[in-house]
Amino acid sequence: MREIRIFPTRQEYERYVFSEIFSDPEIVNHPFYRRLIQFVLDGKAPLFYRESDPTEYRNFSAYYHFILDRQNYISATLRSMYFLHDFTHMLFYYPHDVSAVTQEEFEEAVILSEYAASNETEVLIHYRMPGLREKVFPERRILFDILRDRGVNQPPVHSLLHLRKTLIERDVLDPYFFQDPNDRSAWETLKSYAGNGAWCKHRMREIRRLRNPTEYFYRFLTPANYERVLSSYESLATQESYEQITLRNVRLAFELLGIADPPTTFAACLDEVEELEGQVLVTTIKP
Image (cartoon, rainbow, N blue to C red; front, side, top):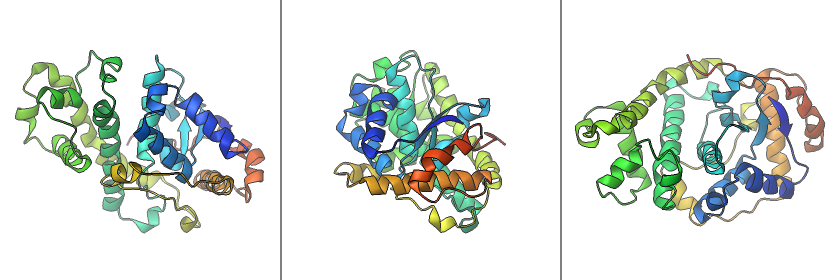
């Protein structure tokens, strides 16, 4: 990690996120996505950094509320959708305390989060924002196209979650959904998620056990209720809550990396975050 950004005030932080991170005005000003982003800022306050090691490109550090500021997207829309995918992940529960969950519980939390985040940014966003699909990989068939071709209106979140799980983990629906040879790429993409279980086993072994895991509890939603909650969400965040969560994030990074004497105040974070420069929060991306 390098150039880790911490802003002294919540107002500066939010201004940066809503202009520099989410640079597509249609996405950032869409009522649902504006509330989704705000919920994550209020409850997780992720820190952004530039890449210092090639493994950081796909190491899923967003689970620990540090997000790689990728610079290689060809459009503001694709860049914003990448961040939106990570922000959707951060709506949900992630078991930082690996001593308190079984392997099966860890896998369920992580895999359901991935299914829900992928549904949101590969399917539901195209229902919520008509016309967006033509701007995003129009030459590639995705699950949204298959549903649209069958005249399916925007499906409920829980139904789509069940559908994705079935399509990835079983073959029973394949003859109905993948009749067109042009849909082979969509089929391959979905089936690639079947390896998530092996990835989860590796990730759980890799995570450093925390000395005081109850310190790192964050507000979260579920893959089944997030849409209902966000539909009427209003921010009550304050400067104090922003400072508390940012401090918690920096302390979590110190713990995961085994760095002694993590900061104890927000003011100290502004200087001591330098100790994270050049560190790789998660070193391995696959088993």
